[in-house]
Image (cartoon, rainbow, N blue to C red; front, side, top):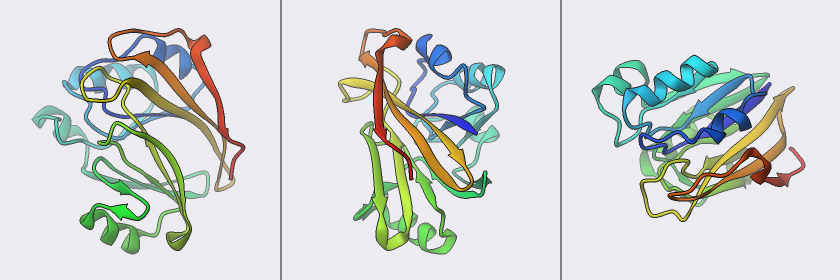
Length: 180
């Protein structure tokens, strides 16, 4: 299954997102959609799995949960918006990770793209960074990857360009990992 992962759109969807994710089977959004029309546009394009973030209002929260766990191609996935990262998890999330034991943990919020292993918890941590214009990040980012037989592969970090500019799909960054 080919996945497009984004977060922190804060009300803005670059048209390039739809080109980059054209071949994806599902889109996963780790919160801070902004207005509900962002969620609606993504759902009209591809199946969406998402969680609400701290800036999302009642309409987005009515459609999505704070935490989401599911199995994708044999891989247990847990997603929430505010999560931290290996060695510095949010206190609530640390307890959830111990209880849920996912193989893949996804969060947003920090606006910093991260792809990290967490050997003590035997999981992979992903944060796609921020694809919108609001925030302190300088580069708008997202991730694209494949899940097959319980493993991640073909991981790509995509730069959409600096805040305030757009970038064509030719701007995709090379793979940041050969898989798991």
